Image 1: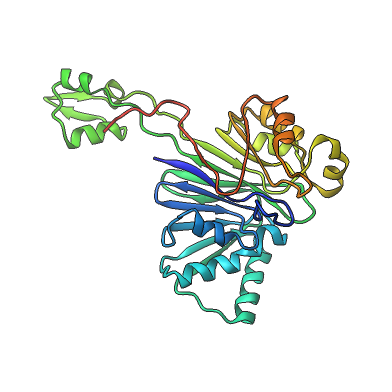
Image 2: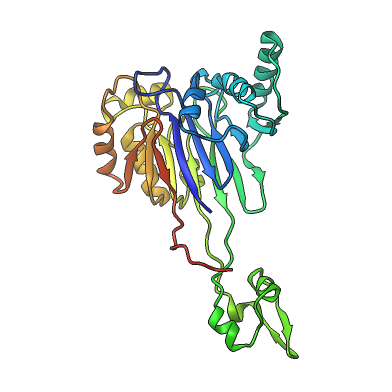
Amino acid sequence: MDLRIVFLGTSAASPTEERGLSSIAVVRGNEILLFDAGEGMQRNFVRSSLRMNSKMKIFITHLHADHSIGILGLLQTLSLNGRTTPIDIYGEPKLAEFLKFNRDLIGFGLAFDVNLHNIEREGLVVSEKDYQITCCEADHHVAAYSYCLIELDRPGIFNIDRALDLKIPEGRLYKHLQSGEDILINGRVVRSGEVVGPKRPGRKIGISGDTRPTDKLCKFFQNCDLLIFESTYGKELSHKAIENFHTTATEAATLAKKSGARKLILTHFSTRYKQSKPLLAEARLVHENVDVATDLQIFDVPYSQPATKHI
């Protein structure tokens, strides 16, 4: 399944000419998993050609305006563009209050249902057939969460040559074996493991939101294929990072390396940085596989093992 990241906003606190406020779209197959919705992010949602009526879940890391206030405009934009599919929204309990108050105050209606889910503790947030979303407390001014998308293991590779040797006819029996079931053929039990290799790991993506780096987060993001971490400051402003509960590029790279993240992408840059190259250079002194995000940039997330055709 295709998995890609679309950055809809990469600035911290206030927008710049080049950068909008925080929002990240994780596009997994035909579903959009949206993390944060800073003010005005719906413009880049439209520019990115994301599908208005896709299955969608929205996760808010915390209720600072540059991460949450854009959800109102996004919902209205989706409705005005003909969306009818329900949306699930996840965040701390005050998010539901915020949305209800503003919808009542402004009085705008929607052409689709909105299902609100309160997050009140760490752990499992969403459990689907082939992936989960989990959360961990972040260290910020207000109640805040970091998130992980964790795909479940994929079936092993089906050995068609071995199946032919065992005279197993193509069709539904292959499907049974692929799903881990044993079958009876010509009076003999053929076990799934005889023709199907070991399960292959799915992908894991971590998204920090706003936070100081912590040991808890280092453990939470263990072995991410891709870690997206805030990098509000360079190391020369580490005192500001501590004071404002943010992270420097060096700290983000250090946490990524300790957690075993294969790739790190920095985002959420202070407006004082006209260029992100110094932050990238700083982080690459610690972790060799680092990129910086720009608005509307797309990153594909491959499997850790090469894709192999199977039934």
